[in-house]
Amino acid sequence: MSGFFTRTAATAAGLMLLAGCEIGPKDSVQTGYRGAGLDQIVDRSSIKEATAIPAAAYPLPPDGGPSAAQSYQNVPVLGGLSKDRFDHLMAQISQWVAPPEQGCNYCHNPANLASDEKYTKVVARRMLQMTQSINTRWASHVKGTGVTCYTCHRGNAVPEYRWALAEGTLNPRSILGNRHGQNAPDPNVGYASLPSDPFHDYLEGKGNIRVASDQALPSAAHKVSIKDAEKSYGLMMHISSALGVNCTYCHNTQSFRAWNLSRAQRGTAYYGIRMVRDINDEYLMSLAATFPANRKGPHGDVYKVNCTTCHQGLSKPLGGVSMLTQAPGLKGGPAIAVAAPEGGPAAAAAVPEAFNQPGAMTGKNEPAPAPGRQ
Image 1: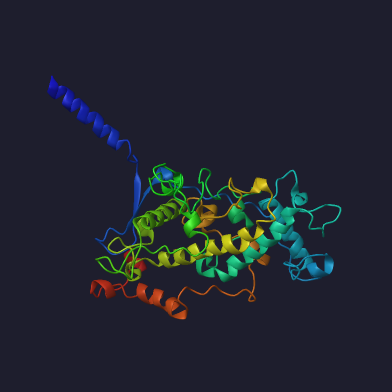
Image 2: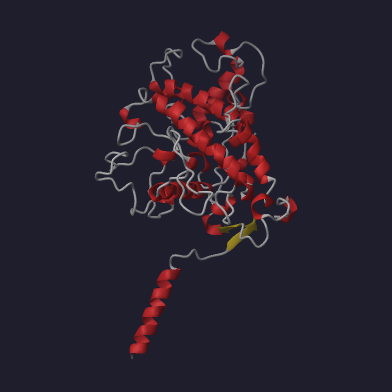
């Protein structure tokens, strides 16, 4: 009789363990060397569908004619556009961002369109500058696809996915009463017990994310605490969830720190993290005095962006579809400086060189993965 209960208990325990697994068909795609475990395994039921791209407000008019600056007052950012292209972009922005019942009046005083009396217009102007900067300065991340207002807003006045200091965080720099978000499962870190707010440390300012040493034993040249490692892992879990991928989308598990064993996507992510910091530090936080209290977090800091703001479960936002053809005024221009890599020109050359020499660490002469081998 006791054996029956033992088997029943074992069966029940097994079923409970299996309940944590994702049941259903999976897709597997090899992304690196054969036999190295470099592949993406995707549960078909969890694949996010790309958001439908909205139709243009009306067809993009030909360029030419008087400029917006000649036709309107107080157009400091988009004054160089033709009046027709400017009007078209304003109609697009109303469709992408403004509540339908308000339309143009969401940002403008209809009796005086030149007025800056509404905070939303001041914010929108800064966001236009931000978008142009992303498409020019951070082309290392967004490539030729670029972004528009719709990439983040998706028809909402405030992007759905944003972050601020979490409620209950008494003081992010104090240990008193602060669990740092640990042991409280949170979707930001894949429901793990890792710190659930890695954003404050790594997606604003210049926090050091590197935790893996190049030496096996402790070294005075590399002092990183376990707490720092946990926070950085929390950020990696966020990135994984935001893009709908696993670790090997960027890394080779043989050595997470080795660039010469990583995929090129890691280089794109490197610039993406720094792009998000730039957005938060230079554009959103600079509007702290402009945003009203209802547009700030529980601690009074402005809402900021993270990887989910744009990606929303896809490795390429909006499935990789570019909307810049309907908003060429958001491309920016040569006046915006391209972001330099940390470490200067030498660092910019070192990353692609490392990608092209995978044998430098392993001592093997196997060439870099070719498209035909994936």
